[in-house]
Structures are given as structure tokens and as C-alpha cells.
Image (cartoon, rainbow, N blue to C red; front, side):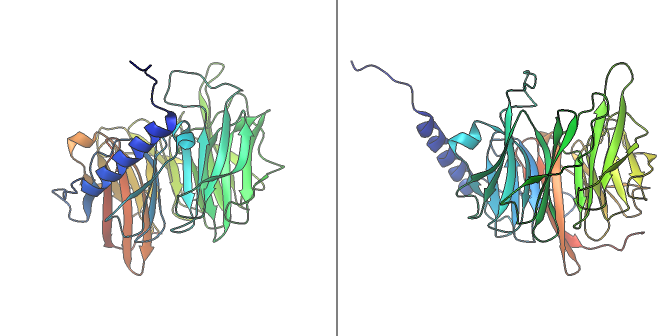
Length: 363
């Protein structure tokens, strides 16, 4: 009998891609009972769908924890997976897109969901695709670093926000849709033992950028929001009224919210200089936050999505997912004309689409 040899990595990857493609082709897409503005387009995809970037009413990119990258160009009727063995062996941490063909993603050798501690030997990269995800190219390598967020700045600018290296926060800027990246010389100096977190970054327009930081040592936990009003070149920071900024987003250069892992959020109306606590209506931990172009603020609480039309002062539940989806992870929305379009991902691999009229909000 011939000696048995384990299947190669390329064969395993090929089988995974074939399985994912068949899943997307034949998976049922049932509508969700309840609010008709939300409905599932994809149920229980075989990955935790972590990050999402809505580009238009028809185009959206989704990033999975285990390296899968999904894209739709037909409003979510079909989703095409993009995956290769090298990306699948790393941990994706951030994603932004410039259209149906061009997107930028950050990946790392470090997996924050594992039991292993971060090591100086870990490496992160920024990848770019210009062909809709068929091929990805390394455009920046960061030995010993880790990216928490990537955002567009205007029509062709981009910014990457990462953990401190040698006592200074990692801030990179691009002016050519992510082809080339330049470190910011005056990136803010790390205070104490500050670290960032995935999702605790935001950007609006072509000049306003924010990221959260927390220092848990030596005894008292403190946290801050760093902010820039010139596209990430210069920075200031303010102290938060709670210990751990989880996720944050801004609807414009002044109004924003930051969540914690508790039943609280904080809101700002002055660009992040000062913050006030808001207690949420349900006794559940807050999760992801998002802002839509009409001025609405959005927030997840486990399986629920909440909305605020008065700059985060009051909140109402607008959607609740089925219990099998466990947690609503991330969402992103765009506005075209007087209508809103967007998508939300769940821990159980679901993708739900939102479609509704824009709402006049309190400014």
C-alpha cells in the first residue's frame, strides 16, 4: 500500500473556497419576522463575520475572523468570497473600500481571540486589491505592530491606526487610495501603558479622526479618546468618564458616541473634547456603534439594534435578530437620495440588509 500523505495547504484552501462558494449559492435567505426594513440575506455563513464596509446601495465588503472576505455588487443578492491560503493563515483586523473593485485590509500574525499573548515577533500587513478581491497585494509591512482600524479620508485618502511602537502610537496615511503609506512623524506619544482595541477607531470626511485608548496599569484603569482635525497629522486627547472605550463612531465632526461593555455609552457634541454618560433602555451590554449620513446614531445590544435621532440622548429598539444569531456584530450604512441602505453582520455568520427612508435628526 502506498504511503499516506496529508493533503497540502493549497488543496485544503481550494476545498474551503469551493465549500464557501456552494454555500453562498444554495444557502436559504429567509426574511426575518418583525421590522420589514431589516431582512437576512445570508444565514449562518461558516465564519464569524467581523468587519463591514458599505460603499453604496449595491456594494458592500465583509471581513471574517478566519480570513474570508465577502463582496456583493448587486445589493446583497449574491456574495462572492475571496480567500487564499496566506490570508487564511492570518487574522484580519480592519477593512475599508473605495468602490466595487478597490479595498484595503489589515491582517496580522497575532490573533486577539486566542490564548496567546502578543509578541514583538508578530507582524501586521496592509493589503490592497484593485480587482474586486481576486488578488491581494502587500502594500505595507509593520513588524511588531498591530492595526486596530483603517478608514477612508475623502475620495482618495486613507488612514491606518495601530498600537504603540517604541512609545508612540502607529498612525499611517495614504493619499492615493492605499497604494502607498507614510507614517505620521508627530503621532501621539503613548501615555503610561496605553493600548487600543479593535473597532475603537473612527473617521469622518477628510480631516476628522478618532481612536480610543485604555491604560490598565499599574493600579487604576483610565481611558482616553485621541482626536485629530487635520487628517491625522496632529493630535489631542481627552479623558473618558468610564474605564474602557469599546467601539466609537461620529456622525459628523462634532457629534459622536463611544460604547463600553456595560449598559452605558458616552456622547459628545464638541468633537470629543467632553463626554457625558447615557444609560441605555435595556439591561444588556452595548456593542458596536455606527452613524448614518442622515444623522441617525446606531448601537447594538446583543441581538438588538437601537437607533437615536437626537444625537444619542434617547434610544429605541428598531430590530431584534433571531436567538440563533447570538450577537449582532457590526453594521455600516450609506445614503443615496432620501433613502438609507446598509448591512449588519452577526456572530453566527449572518448578513442582514437594511433599507429605509432617511430621517430628519436633531442637530
